[in-house]
Length: 194
Image (tube, rainbow, N blue to C red):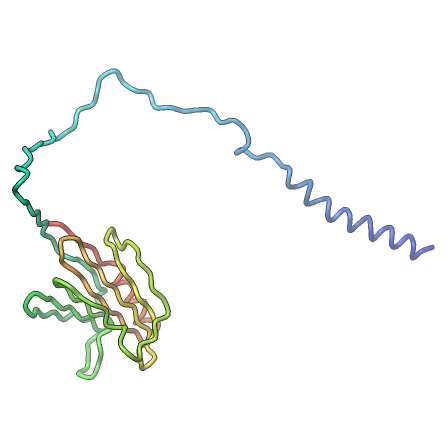
């Protein structure tokens, strides 16, 4: 008789544990009730633009107009890095080292700006883990990540603007600290129109 009572008690408790959460699901939610509409109070006069829009006459149909918008790529690096820059023809190269570099040190980030670039990490020995295309601060970027032949993590960015100038960035990190600094430098890349 006691085991029968015990089984009834256990079954009531188990049933109660299943019913209790179901009852809690039907609670009051502010999202289910009708919300009061709050609209802006509009004035009676129209607003005018602060600067008048200058509409220029379109060029004749037989004239090809090529508009070049000049600008520069900008990026920031922490004070704990050393930045070296050099220019080789149309290509500007910026290399970043952790602290003060020794002659045998390799840069953690190399950024090249010029007319056109191709991937460098598709060579033999590089193990690509991921790739994606996205907007980096408003610029279309292709990113490739993986490991170098010596096992260091790398991230490679290719940014090409419609006007033809391109940016190639390669970050190679051995330690977690180098990786954080390198990714911060890559994330800060922006293009600023002149």
